[in-house]
Length: 426
RNA sequence: GUGAGUGUAGCUCAGUUGGCAGAGCUCCGGAUUGUGAUUCCGGCGGUCGUGGGUUCAAGCCCCAUCACUCACCCCA
Image (cartoon, rainbow, N blue to C red; front, side, top):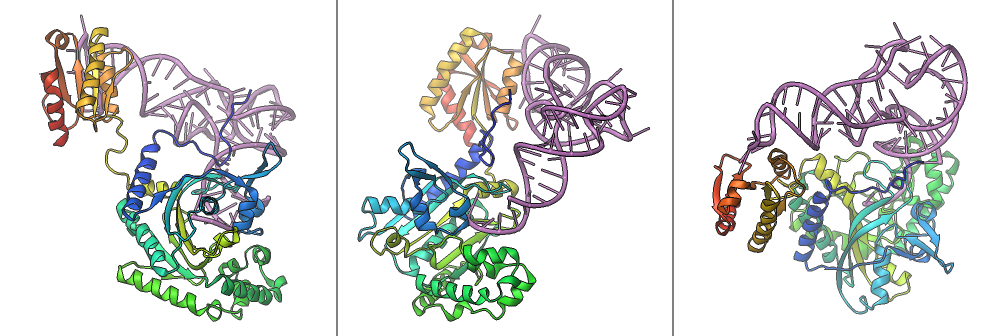
């Protein structure tokens, strides 16, 4: 009988890993709070139609990467491949975008049926940030400043770079897209196979082709600069001014095209070279047309999403884990015999009452002092509290520092909390 | 969907020309009857991914298949 294993591309995040995930999530939440963002919690499953209408019918995501299935009533449902569509749907449904300004974030799993590789999985996790109701470049800038601050907090600022572009208004983008398709259509047979396919799936991506012949053809292609509408150009310039004001370094990459259909005007990506092929760690842009496209009133919107797996991978490979992140305890209680252990449990509860930020672990399961102390050491605890027959008889506890060169002392139960507190603050 | 690489103990990996299935780490016990992290000794632990083939004999050679990894594509 073969053992059941996890689905390809869907990973268990093991206890060894979760402290780093929590650290990243806590850090992000703290930064978002400092900018006044509120959390929204969204379903993982939506009507298939939502993604088709928002992401675009002919994108790779919709064409071949969605986990789609029929509900029991025959309705087609899809595991969300990204978060923006669902967020817009929810905001619309509850009137959050009606003449209002929103700064929102969410986190959770996304699903795409792709071949897994480093930094890319079928179930992956994003922290998404979306804002609604603000037309100007100021909010675009805020999102970038916010993410830049997060990299600083995480110690990653030296390892990411910002790329920036403007896709122009939806109209300008569409016009340019049509022109490009028309132009490239003349050379269809000379394009590399990938680009031929992109002609219908993702024409703007052809600009990015690594094929020499294709690049040759592109030299005479219409340039987007000629199609960029004035409003978008000004928007982009103002955004750049704010970034400059705040010392944010960036590179304008005219070839930067986001894969999802709904983007317009500002698009940006934070990219790293430390992750292999999947270097985009955070990406987003403006999507002024999406709300309307999904049946709401015209509402300006900007947002971005970051890939948690990729950031965790970065923190690991660059050794940016905070110190002591793998500790499971600050204080570990060791006891010899049943009576001593019963007292240890009571003492541990007492210490937890008195010092509420301390992690206190009691050895469970009878074993030798040696084994118990080994576990104490492995837990990462700074202090072992030892209760043997002698201590029990004297109603005292031996306090043994496990790190550094402190002396072991014996104390009464009443003295414990203060003593431990002093030890931990050193 | 395409290409390449790798599958041997819980983990990381050796395994020669085809000839008894190995090491380190982890875990448990002991050296030290009550003291971790260092040292020494012992122990637990195997469908060699799976199925077939060649052979007196296969972890090793051949075929198929599955899984994983990386890359293309695409994207967070």
